[in-house]
Image 1 (cartoon, rainbow, N blue to C red):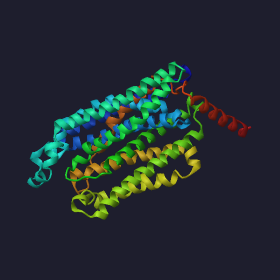
Image 2: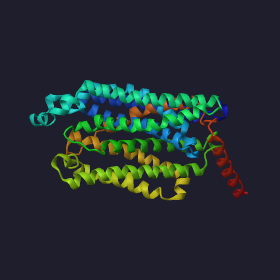
Image 3: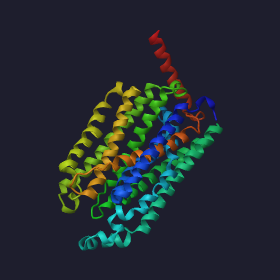
Image 4: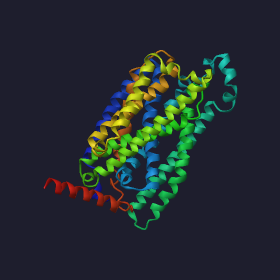
Length: 405
């Protein structure tokens, strides 16, 4: 390992504190299962999707970086790689969803379906929506994601040991088809894990909405970590405002992409005005859920959109990280808005377990992330882009020194 780029001690401390938070809130959350088992599994799905979204979002951003190059990708690459190495944990944490499938998915417990629903869903229940096939599909999803993550991390490690460019080429060649496989698998996973909670409803944009939201979650989390590292050696000498400016522009693009998919789905369904389609939006746009929907529009799109138009904000890591954290908070709220009404209908209800689950799962996830981040140098020093990144950083620091003089 190149010790010049070792992770600072703050990363290990972050992992230790996160683990304490994770254990405490996991215990509190597990106690909830004894009082309300249904709510326990509903809340678990929310927390699981949020943190899996960060890991998967990091995977697609990592492949995007290998395809496009650029300094912005170099400074976040090792953070993205560490996030992708948490996917084995998320595979393990999927087991409670399988164990609680009958509490989450109506099709997994036909006794809860009405005769009308059984007739309407007969083809789906016979050919698609049954537990054994659900498990097979999930196994395929994780096989694809884990394979991509394995080779992206393996060849990145090889790149650190050699300068012949072979590993760099392999990373780029894998990333193209890898992104196609990622979009396909995440689309179907979103249909299986979330849309099938309301099996009589469907949307062709739903999967792409999760592709965008996962990428957005992954980038927002990565910006927060890089901002934390940018105040400390060795990254203080590498990361420049130009890199945060580029990351801020990408964050703005993903906010707009998420908003575009969300708005397109709403407009298409609402303008069609078909009973079997609008039934999904009706409980989510009235009463307390309607207020949450408005908050999502304002805080998940409007505020980040207008703030990220500012050049000075994007170049300031401390201001940019505040937008990133806001987006992460709104991602949890958006998941509650998407999933909650499927179980509670128009009746507004947010359980304390909806907060405890993301904190419990997140504490364990961040602890593993911090451990993985500490295992490798924070920069890929044999990457062809490394020299230009260092030049940009040195130019910035020289300019700052001249300005102060």
